[in-house]
Length: 95
Image 1 (cartoon, rainbow, N blue to C red):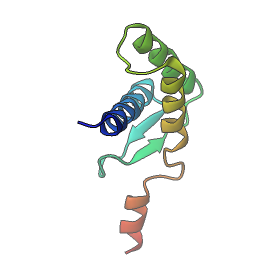
Image 2: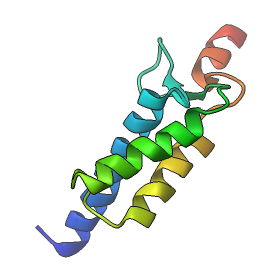
Image 3: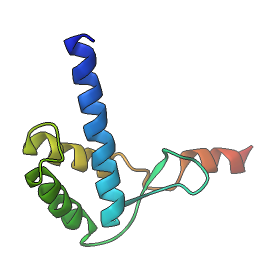
Image 4: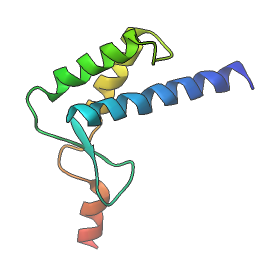
């Protein structure tokens, strides 16, 4: 396996791990109808909780990367979640 492919897999694993932590913290949730579609949950302390869980996962050696990379991945997971609901559900309702 090439070094580039390994790096892409590492980054993808980190991204998915960050999403799981953000879901666990209650910062985002997965659409009940569309796997992989993430929705932002309006919860005041969930974002901080996600970073705390992520920090603990990093300290426990569960993350392949730097702490900064992982915190950025958690931040991106939350920022990229749909604010106005699942776009696939919205599209289905329009059609």
